[in-house]
Image 1 (cartoon, chains in turn blue, yellow):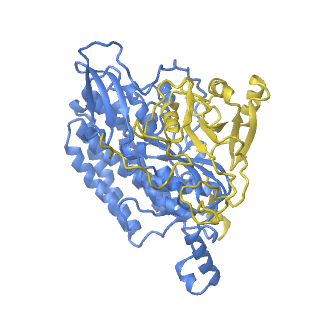
Image 2 (cartoon, one colour):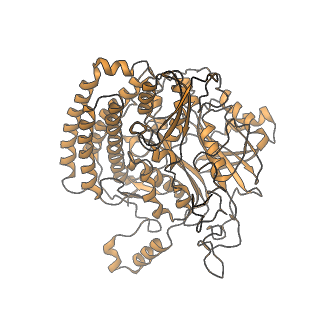
Image 3 (cartoon, chains in turn red, purple):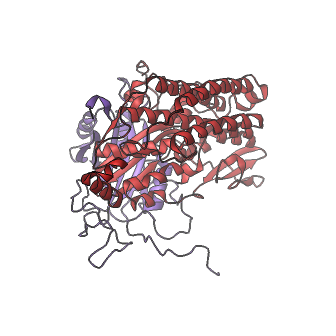
Length: 417
Length: 210
């Protein structure tokens, strides 16, 4: 954990009125042009419609219309037992999919007060960091395309495929693995995973250096990113930003270290990546540096992975091992009850946030004592990120709007849920 | 399984901030906090609806809760219903569209006579002086159609959260500058996250001949 900083009192910025998430043109000049950016446009990274009012090439009005990929995941989860709800979750934030699974399982474990084996925690960190790496690679690749540089896309997607290969090796699925279970992870790491992963780390370190070389001193890149979309820390707090975007504004807040961290992050050595500036450039820098720190964390996990079981042995929550079903009647009964009815969770309200690739990702779970959640709300970071778009885009060029949208990195599945 | 292999896995909220609750009572009167609930180390303050903005303003300015992390509306319709079966059915069989508590007779600690609750989770980020990023949940209870004061003037990031609660649960937020649907289409009927919203047999959209 980072050393405690000296107390610093931040001034309250005047509250934006009337609504901060939409920008209205100051005049009704008939020369203003209203255009739709999206819903289907490559730079919106999904199905987002940004209704933009332009004065020449300057953005003077901006309104986000969302909900195009709203699938009612919260409503669906209410109708499912807890363990059946797990596959829904990674499909929202499909770029850092493993974070979603982990966040949901952690919320349920918190409501159950269920203890998780240490090895499972460490494996969860391993895959959370791989998912973060995956997300940042897609961010960097598609973000550079938005800024007019196509080369980085191919570099990043080649490396992304290597991440997905690791997921496939360990979980059988390239994306949405449903590997995280309430109480631990589904299976132990397979033989040969560790050498493959170490090989990947070496490969990836070299790759990240290459990406850095590509964009570090590129004058076009710097002109497109430096000083664009500046978000001071006070404003970032007001707009509720978390994650890399907040750290790009100079606030060293990371749930992996705040209050000591969660899960195995409590035992790992990690310092939040912070950049000053709060512009598009800083937001890109934070993510490139976070790729490096993710690789360091993955290496730490491989070096210090504790032995032991990978899932809790609480038979009231976790399925018994398959081989026991042939010999033990209790195991068979538990298996049957868990599969048909599910486990019950004590009544109460819990909120368990974790640090996903784009910020605080939390599940607000209201349990009623039965085997299905009464209410689940997904506190998705992307929904909050999108609110700040209007603040950031006031008076910028339309081309910079694309750069800003790329730099805050919303995932529309995560926005709409 | 030996205990050194296990770890109690709960993303931490910091210490429950009872001091903030005490200072709120001292500043705003004894009846501002209706009830305090502590569950799994998370402190929830049930506050009077008309005091919500005052409470949050005080929490932001005097206590340093500078990040609004979440606003969640919950529909408790049927929570204490007579039906305990988790299929939401009765003796006549399963009824998909009937809301009923799965709690098997468990009496909820919080469900009052009101139908909806709105929980606001606040967090300390930049104002932390002791390395303890505390969280606090402020909760109000309202009935059908009863407005909740909007927090947009205190925490601008409440904007989309409150619009979503309005859209999906039909909770009106008084003083919200732009309260309209956010996820569902503008002309959608009903509020899908409500417990009495039908699960099956919804009308086919865009099929009108008009």
